[in-house]
Image (cartoon, rainbow, N blue to C red; front, top):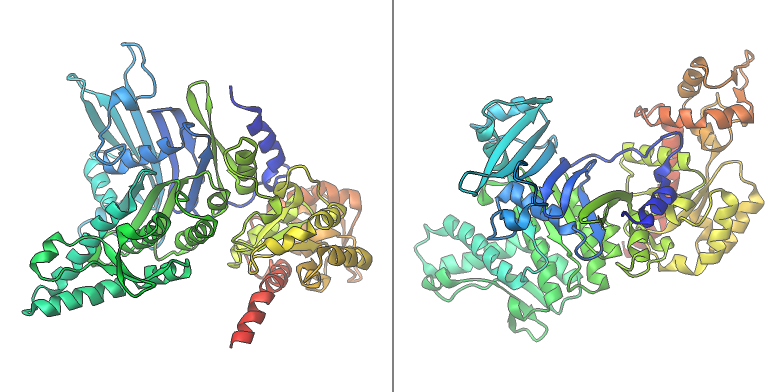
Length: 590
């Protein structure tokens, strides 16, 4: 049976909900949903609302990696490198002879605006930006696996879609990196790929020395960003490059990379530390796979399936890699989507949400969760080490707010204006055993003030309180916060609000746009007083409490920056407070 854990996490999560209100989904990246049926431990699961980085965590053998294997089967025709589908291993269960033995994987695509079709594939454009591909495997009369393909666009099956599917999938790089991957072996393979590309460019040179020298220089340019990341990681090696040969004949046997050690001697990649090998490898693969110029083939997007990328990395390297995952999947020009299995809370927190995976009887069950709840679930089940909730979201400034509706609306506005780096969250959604409200915030900061300094300097924890909170309570919060409390405790500035909304609109609701309030009044959701003498509108407290959920739902549909002006100013007020320390450091440097 499914554990009680999921139910408790789901209740405590609340995901910024009231009256069914959900936080706005982030922009989807290429694959928006996956349905897997009859594959290994997965009977029938549909994973939806997938972001640029999707994490799966759970106990060993819970079925996390089977999602990655299913994707590898879908894109590459094999469950693991060199292993085609095998019904004795890969079929979920053994049905009776009257039932058809079948594995089905359906992937829904939402193409980013930068996705382009090369010459000759213009016919694919008629599919639109949203369509699905379903691949099914069954046994033929000789009991051999047989694949069939179905293309679905606008809810209808596309006739003779096999060729279109093949053409479309040829535009996507899919890379599966199992946990047992040996970095040095994969590095050798990729070094040969890079060398081959460069060698083709230079093959017209008549001088062997020119070719070899040019090869090294070209590889160094390609590896520039990867070299910078390796240097920043604290590795005792610098200037990575392809391990070039001494002659043109030796280029046929050339493989691997080398770097300069602390003593100035060249060090082959197999002699690097395992953690730095893996760290270097992922940076290298990112640069190769997301280079959509013709040098590595015409591709338009990349999907990675990575098992436990934290393996072999100490905590600092895990943190650096997790931050890179955020940067890479946020870079629209790179069009990279990552699916990751992990036991690391740091890696989990590089995604906004993920899946807790557990076994119910003999079947894997996938529970969608926001990151804090996912990390708590992993801790409670002994999957990962304890991480205090106040250290959650180590890659973003965290802003504690008073209520669920505040969390939902402010995150919406932050995403609209490109300030999605800010994570607005209520205290119960950060730590499930806490309650909401300003008194709870004061108590929480007092109890945990010593932990605040352990957050990254550029990703502090801030507290945003409503405009009507008294000066004495603000001062108490600042005092409990300690150093920089006067900077990171922020009171909403009522001067930002539209003049129409008077002081009876307590809380964040005073920052809402008047047309939302008026529309709600006209719909009979609340009773607002509209004075004829030009004085601000007013509302009774009971009416406000009754209508605020509906107002928030309406606000989540507003994207007009003019109507969002007060809330935008408030988000910018918080953003300035969050980044002031970093800006001060930059001024000192400059």
